Length: 269
Image (cartoon, rainbow, N blue to C red; front, top):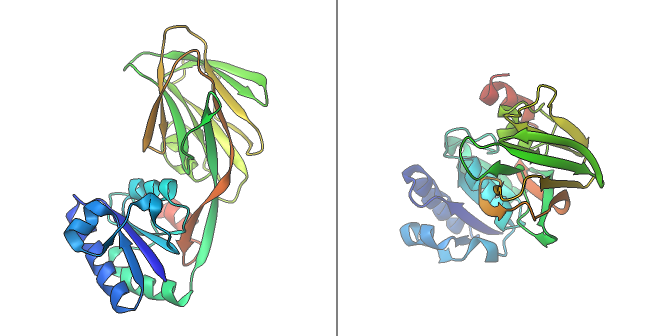
């Protein structure tokens, strides 16, 4: 098999685990590609994450590392928790080698999740596994957001920002501002205002087949667009942001159904 490894090269535990994974996989007769900053520390054949033609990407770190891997490569992601929360990760460091043995033997399942396709003025940005956030570009300054669903104006909300999330992202930033938790298999999006100046403002769950459009009502007041906490773009009142279902899927390597266990153990539900 061909594996890719990505991790934060400035995190000691992630680097050590990456070296352990590299040594094990190469001794097992597998081809391994390593991101350039990491390969300088642990060796291995160097390749950019976007250019890795591999069967599996190994993401060692926290949820941010996993989201970055899903954003930059279409291969299934095998994730090892070397971060603070690791809600999206599959195994602990102690389980890594045993789990890699199972991957090599094909003893795993692929957990497919829907992604958001995001377009700014019809120009496609990066897809999102978790969410896209539209936030004020100035601290403590609210904006007036217009929300359209399938070309119909549904709401106008003054708020710090808006979040459009997948079921995967409903347990992340969206949950912290009042989103319901959506089961991963649902074909749905959730739209959540951030600190709305409106008592009736609530999270809105809609079909993933719908097309969402967000506009800024006020002139000369800009916002920023943040995709999965990784990509940042600017948005002005002249711009139109549309969100719909991507043709791509986020694919996680799993060894069982652990969604409810994660909800209980990591989110304290």
